[in-house]
Length: 303
Image (cartoon, rainbow, N blue to C red):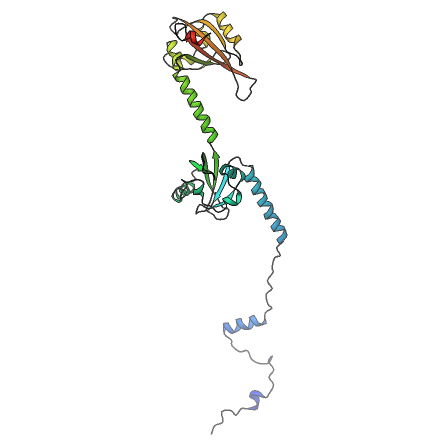
């Protein structure tokens, strides 16, 4: 019987000098494993972060951002891709009549009904093509009253990369003023008496259709090339008109004027001096109203 467990003494019991052993062929994996075991462990360096300083910087940035929003003339609404409000400034809250907490996370369609998701998608396309986008829309306050607004829209990375900034400008006063001016202009255009606006030097700036008809002018440009003195050959009457007109009281007088064809034009004149809208003490020009002497309403107009 062969004893498989029988060993020679030199196989195990004799000490072996490792330095005298012949080199043993090793595979690359074995060599790499041995090198790893013998090598010193790598030490990972961690950079310390000054958290208090970083938090202070962020707090300063937030404060500057709030100051920027507070200092803007327009109302600012910042919305996400779904149209939900993320941030507003005080100007916007004054426009819409909401508190800051009430505006948080409500949909912008509650304030601007026509700013739907489809419209926002189209606006994003324009912004992607570097097109400046401005829309006119009616806005709704908390008390359900409305005001017209001009809204400039751009993109910003606030919470998300696709957030939008809505810069809302209340146009209510401007539109009311425009409508008032339109009413006045229509009244002047349709007036049956001649009305002329000229500078203090007598240069004609505007004349209504009734005056063009009185002096036989073809159009406005034909009249604007003249001075009021071209229709007032009597120098004494002209000086009286220019010198006696004031802001507080209208000057009335009779004048012998002429048309562009040099035909006589006897009229009764009412003249008022105008002021510069910015500087109330600065005289700006004259508004002259001319009524034909043959007009039957003259007696009722002039007392």
